[in-house]
Length: 209
Image 1 (cartoon, rainbow, N blue to C red):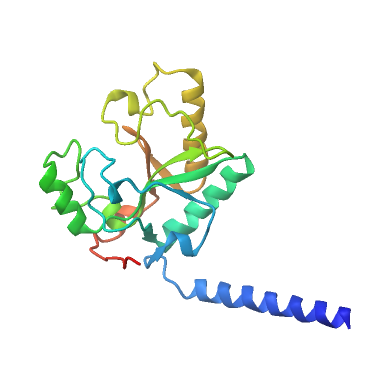
Image 2 (cartoon, rainbow, N blue to C red):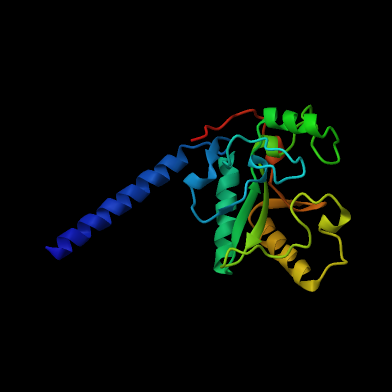
């Protein structure tokens, strides 16, 4: 009897996994999905859903992380690689609807700090993430500057930093690049999935619970 139950549960869970895989196969890479529906292993600190950002204003109604499906798949794989080393990705920002970009532009209409909504950014295309790493205790790794610090110290090429900071940035960059992402030279936290610029600027909205 125990063997029969074991076979039943094996069949049941393998069927569930197959259904999930088939569902994923029906989702287009360009579709918007919520990251939390594909992994519970990320840490979130969605800065623009609070006033704790360079705008000093809350511009998102709630802290959801939507991305194109192809971006989610690449990000989950990257996080799995970090977890094997004892770290996890912490999310600061994901997809940003064009209406939000316009709102940010109204607050600070300066292309050095905010992408002009007339052109749009990779965030508006669902292919960009702003991230850092946390250790097993949830503490952020020292990256030398805070998120959204607009100065030369935030650049990947800035050398006047402690060795620990350089190693932390290199770890983040190395695994993200191996996971189909491209780094942004002036911001250590910003990564674009490859070919994200081919997607259209979007104003897709998410529902808040």
